[in-house]
Image (cartoon, rainbow over all chains, first blue to last red; front, side, top):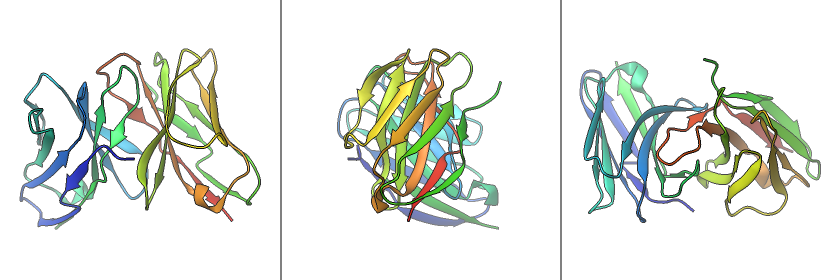
Length: 111
Length: 113
């Protein structure tokens, strides 16, 4: 079973625009991670935010976490065609490498 | 530093057969987890091994099993394959403590015919 939902399921934008994806989860967590997946290949780790953090930045990525609402958002600024991929959030509520994934958001960035 | 390596990349098997997939984690990582990805169910956790011991297990039938060796390399085995086992199988390695990033391999795409 999946931990939560990602919203939207699909997003299409123009190059240069910002893309925002949201993730909700159900149980308490240790941390939340965001991953990117290109065309059914492996998952690329983007960013990890701990449960006691509210916001984190990495390059063009900005992640927020609201534990009271059990939700997180991923913002990609100044998007590029190469950002076209599926994006997944994953939560870890256990001491260990056991992630629970959302359903993912399919992002298409048009040149 | 080499990433997570999964072999083979592609497999075609017949119903009823068994299959073994291999995962070599990042050097120094002691935790290896396995996930199944299908269009219908998404990404689902299979099991996790840490220092050769299964530490966590997902909700999969006993046909799915795994092990980890002393060098942290891991294998997963699926016996009596069913058509529904067709999926992308992903392995992730991490240091194993709480709040550590997990890094994924490219996956093994298994097709059962």
